[in-house]
Length: 252
Image 1 (tube, one colour):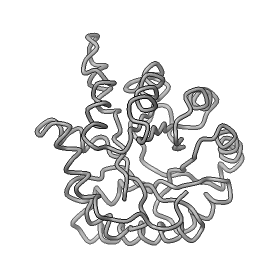
Image 2: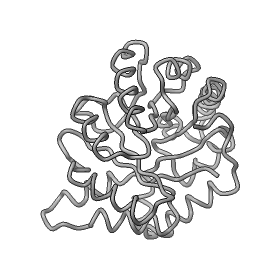
Image 3: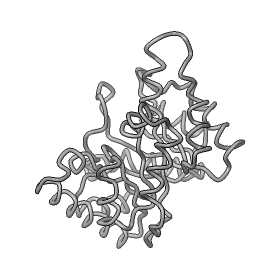
């Protein structure tokens, strides 16, 4: 079954607006996991504008002790401080993204050949700690082979352009490119994750076109939906779209 990892960045950003300590991030993580989410994702950036470094061990402890079948995913640029944080907290997965520190959100995948020395070293370090590594990539047939060459276990398809153009001819073209990239990943022996601007409206079509998907990471949309329906119902609806679909081959 395709796994749903709920990204908590938007919740943390709301918390950080005021010094009152709520919404409580660990409480929300517990709510989404109790509602059926398969894991949680956090992206601690250097300026701590949403997830703070201090959040990471607390959330990791919640997953390990309270929800041992769930997964903890930490994503970020693989600089020294980030790698230290990941290594200490031992998530199930580290997702490397090519973000500039001042970037508002992830908006492009890796140019893997250009950054191969950085990625090879960081991936080797994570694997030495027993942590699975996924690389954030654009819809590009060449990217999965490059990801395999530097040692990645999975790729995460950047679905932002698809989400932005859904229900238009361009959206169809983006979906075809994502499907071709996922096929390339499976051929290279890589697992396929996906994330960015996936919503209740467009997720179903994506899953039909990309059946190789193992995991989707959704944050902004599910948080927005939770404002009107609550997190438990939002999680149930996203899980409903993902249910009944078998995970494709090539996962690891």
